[in-house]
Length: 556
Image 1 (cartoon, rainbow, N blue to C red):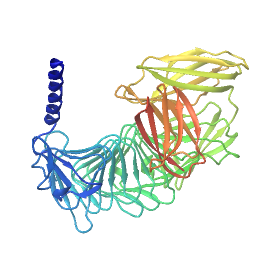
Image 2: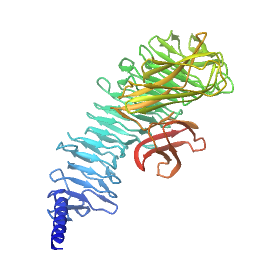
Image 3: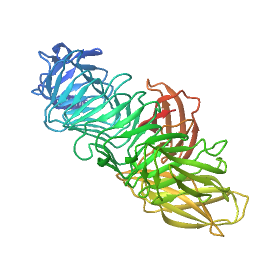
């Protein structure tokens, strides 16, 4: 018994010792219920070597690790220099002032100097400067508005909200703001005063009045990189880009409404120009198309008559199409006839460098300021389903048809986003049948660093052909994205691609109220959300009750 008691005492001592070792003398943590001001010493506890005690002064960069604990909200309302600051999940740090300016200087110490797992807000004329680094982790929220200035480089891997209704954004001055998560540009101007703005996920421009990116200098002051996208979701006001712009090869500029551009010699667009929300019209300046290898994506959707109910790209001036790729996607419910897919206030010069159109489309015509295409016939194969599922570092494709007429074979085609499709396999078709036919193919060599796009080319005995819908498997540095959802923004239907087993997907409003919940196994699903009100929603992905991914969705 004595041995057992001694052993228990030893374990307790080791536990106390480990707790103590986790802190250093001079460390701070917040002590507010639930909100307080940084400069007030009574809002802080400090570690004296054995216990947390009330601080005699507010923390600065001269102290140790400064932690804002979960449930606390701290405001910086007077100038201060900080370092080694950690904002825990469900905690908040706000830097702002009601009059004048406040300077928050981030020192460059060891590691990340301001690490945020909760909420970080810059507002009301605050200036965040210094040589330190600021990182908002995935799951965190970053707010930037009301004339704040960023002069300390900031990386946001969580959600970002720029501006607010009737409120401008602010200035990025000789620093970088990198948005690797979903962002909503609500309203106002972003002033690039020697700074750089980069987005690598989806940033929606939902402003109802003119919003601008201004005063960029140097090459590529505004970058849309990776598989990032800048999407307009409000057609009542223009988004104006007055800065050098680089749209990467897998990136997208799209949506509805008008993009204007005033620095024509400084635009680089090797990505996608994707108008509409199916249906919808996007208006762009000629610089987005002229002498650029952009891929124009047009989706033909169900309509009562040809010429309506589909996406259109409008160009505010004359433009050459000779460096552009046109990709048209069909909906079997869309009627036969001629569709106007592009218009210009000037004149188009063609032809397109590449035109990817369904086999039952033809008569692609460029005439003056109009581009039209005609849907000619009904497709010879009735598709039931088509899925693309990642398995380790391969992709398993499965498809089914319930009717085939003179079908010879299927060609599996693969592309990385923004690239050209290439054949990776051939499967013989059933020929002529009115019964269910199932097919499968394994792609052994997908690109595990980006989006992989798959489509099935069905070829008839006479050589005619048509295409299936496109399926997407997204890898990032070898890891597959568990769930992808699109289109985003959407009108009524959301297509959800699931890559893992036992997945739960929820839709909540921005207050966290759950509105929809589904349980999915690997596959592709269409969910109807037409009865949701217009606005922004949060999609959350859970695996074994653990949240693994999140995405902002826009309902139009």
